[in-house]
Length: 193
Image (cartoon, rainbow, N blue to C red; front, top):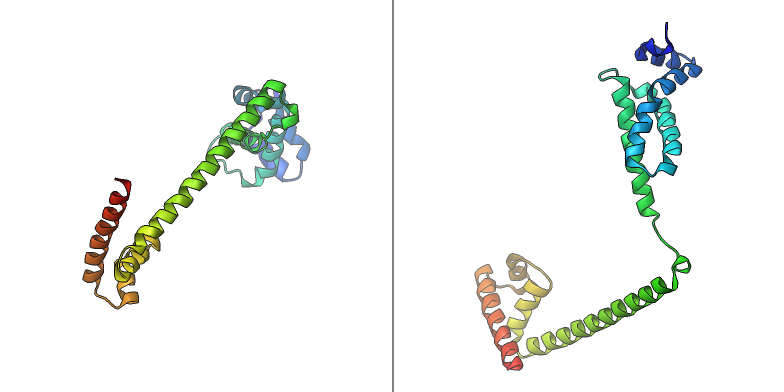
């Protein structure tokens, strides 16, 4: 009888009963299938190492194996998950040292950093100007209009929450917030003309 003709479930039962060396039969039987899966999804130099991890994980997970599908399928799913784990890990560790870059790459990197930091500074300046302009325009409104706009639009309160804070009806808050927004827009529009 050929060693590959032995039933997988029988081998697994023997391994779980303490004959750990019998796991080698499964390893030999499915090595080509696992390698085939890994070769399609991983860099060549990583295939052997990940294959070892697949068989170790398979051995460690044998107690959870349920013979609902063939062992080959179960082990194949472990191999596919190992590929995902490999790429997830390599993606997290894909940092490159600046010192390993060529001179051209370093110059490009420095230029990109300078452009990005300049854009950040410009954006912060624009945000600061916008805040100043908004505060100036809000100062032109009545205290009631300013309070409604600040509560509803700047602090994000609902009309009901604003009405409770100000002691006004919800309808009054809705009407005043609509009118106050229009007044604010008119003030800003006059400023840009």
